[in-house]
Image 1 (tube, rainbow, N blue to C red):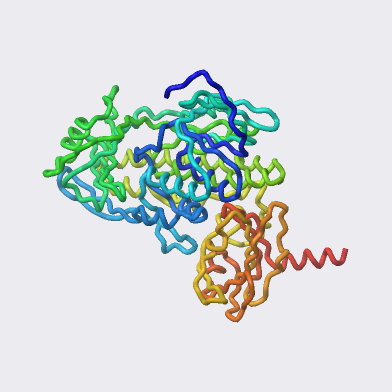
Image 2 (spheres, helix red, strand yellow):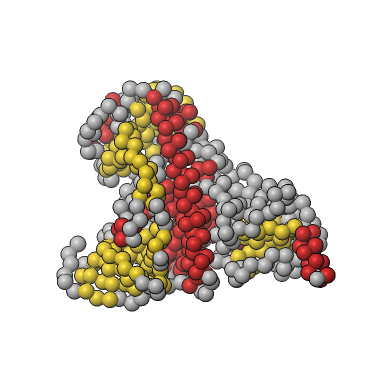
Length: 525
C-alpha cells in the first residue's frame, strides 16, 4: 500500500467496524437496518477468495433469515453433501453424516455447505441494499478513546485518516490490531501436533456430488470437498505428527499427497490458489470490551476447525451486539452493553472446549482408520448453535424453579407454522419475529392472554402477536395455531405470554394465572 505523509480527519460515525469478514458484515447489516450510521473498513485491498470456513450452521442461518438473506444462502449452498470414504482407491462407504435436519420441530434450517467468500458476498450485497459499503485498503493502526468517543487512525492509499466514532468493534481476525490497541490478550494453547495443509484447487476426474475422504493410521486424513456453485475444491491434508518441519504447501505437494494417500486413477489436481500451512490454536480474549471498544469473532476467540463453529460463533457475536448498540445509541441505559461480554464470552469458552474435544476424537478415530466415526464426531446438537442459551443473563427473567416449562427464559425462541386468519395462508413465527423489534407472543387456547403480562423498559418497539388455537379468532396481530405446533414447541399448556428479544432469545415468560394473581394482589393493596 502506497502512503504519503498527509493526515486527514474524516467525518464521524456512530459505529466503526474494523474488519469486513462474516462477523463485521453481519454487524454492519444489523446496524444498517436499524438506521445506525456505521462504517466498515478492512485492511485488505478487496474481498478474499480463500474458501476457509464452509459450513453455515442452523442458528447462523436463522440470523441470516432475520437479516433477509436466508433464501440467498440456501440458493447458493447445498444442504446435504454425502461423504465417500475410501481405502486407497476402493470405496468403503458413502452417506450423508449430518444428524440435524429440517424435520426437527421448531428448527427450520439444516446446516448448509457454502464457502466463506460466497457467504460474505451475500452479506455485502445485503449491506449495499441497506445503504452501506466496505472501505477496502483501510488498515486501522491506532485506537484512542475518551469518555465520549473513539478515534481510530487508519492507513490508506491516500495517507493517514482519523475517524471518530461513538463505538468501535474489532472484527479484524486472530491478529487483531484493535485487540492489541486496547490491551486485551489472547489466552490459550497451540496444538502443535495438529497441523494441516490447506488449499483451493481444481480437480478433473472426481465426482463433484460428494466429499471424498481418506483416513489411515499411516498417512492421517485427506479430504477433498467440492465448494458449491464453483469448480473449486477445498483440499485438506493432515501433516504427519512425526514431521517436525513441514514444507509450505504447493500444487506439487498436493499431487504427491494425493498419489500417496488416494491413488485414484484418472484424477488430476490443477490450479492451486489459496495455500496455507495451518497450525491449530485455541484461544480466548481475556476481555471483550474496553470502554467504547468491543471485540467480536476471531478477534475475540480462535477455535479448532472441528465442528465448523468459528465463523458461526462470530456471526452470533455480531447478532448479539448489534441490537444492544442500536438501543444504547437510541437512549437505552449504557449498562445494556455489559451484557454482551457476560453472554457471549461463556459461549466462546464452551465452543472452544467442544471443538477441541471433537478434534481429539476425530484424530483418535483417524488413527484407527475409522472414517465414519470421525466424520460423525464432527457434528452434534451443540455445533448447530441451537442449544446456546443465556439463562443467567441480567436480561433474562428466570422462571420459578417449580415451573416445569421445558422452553424457558434465556433459550432460543423456536419457529412454528401457524395461519393468518385473514388470508388462510401459512405464516411462520419467524416471519413475525423478523426485524429489529422485540416481540410479545401471547399464547392462548381460545381466550386472549393479557397483553400487559410482561413489561420491559427495553421492549421498544414492541410487536404483540396473539397465538391462539381458536380457529374462529380474527383481528390484527392474531395468528391461528391450527395444528398446535406453536404451543407444542413453546411447551405452552395454559395461557402464557412470552417476550422475545430482537436477537430471538426469550427474555421472559409469564403464565396467565401468575399474572392474574399479581394483578389481584395489586388491586387489593
